[in-house]
Length: 407
Figure 1 (tube, rainbow, N blue to C red):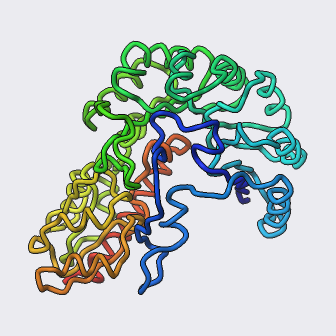
Figure 2: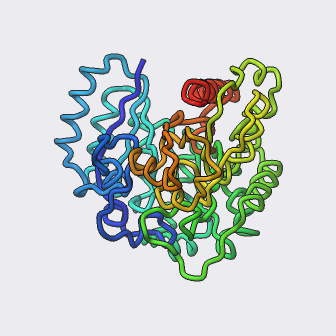
């Protein structure tokens, strides 16, 4: 069985009734090629790291174009057990949303909306319409159960209707709510009330996302700060907040970048000594570069398997958002002749080798596995066994790379 993804297109800020105040795509200007794993060896820049990373599309796709793609993909994929609606714009703002839902619903395959803010839902009756046409799961940004905060920070013109739709969906299907937590705005008592509101209405879970306002927190598109003067919560403080809330409510509450308290991820392997023993032994010498959040856990797991080096941490918190600027800030004299960088980081391989060889020592740069663990957005729909399997596969691949290319 396979999953069919229905891409409706659209762009952030344009096809979502305007940017939320905290949107990571706000104030992005110009076209810059960051470099990535998809670039050609001798050419920095491709569709993914130039436009895709900004979710820069030419508006919503027509219903006809979407329907034609669905038909073509059905013929290639065969048996489908799930249809997911996604795009750069917000599905709730798609002009032909009702027609699209009817078309997909006629296939009698469970529907999933990968993300919506609900800002395009002005009629609460749309909730029943979606359920009747097969909607079974949705990821829905709530931000706050206080409609005035939604109006002010999400620029939602009809926050009461959006919350009404969310309430009706909570009582009928699997709803995973999401909220970017902004200190002094929707945290504290307001966040507790939002959790209570969701739990009373039957939401399956809530994903909390720490607000980012600076480049090292992941703003790689030259648009920092998003909100001038707005303070940001530390990673450890945010993790403690997630832990307290998860202990206080029966629905699952997790956070990104940290953490999923029920599963123990990211890096749930640290709590499984028997599984750690099954990983290959590290026999090679190579420098492993990662983000500041993952570095301590990565160091511990590799050391347990015999790694004698020191994991190199960047100022960038999230490994997959590392750019060439982060590598330029490293001291190459502290690096081995083989350097393994995160598989999904936004760096061109040749440029990385040039930057990390500036001390006269020619270094080989190798991309690591695409994923080593699951963040909260991924683990929300996974079992602990699934996360541990992902981590075992990722770390086994990483260790094999160290042994193959290291000295």
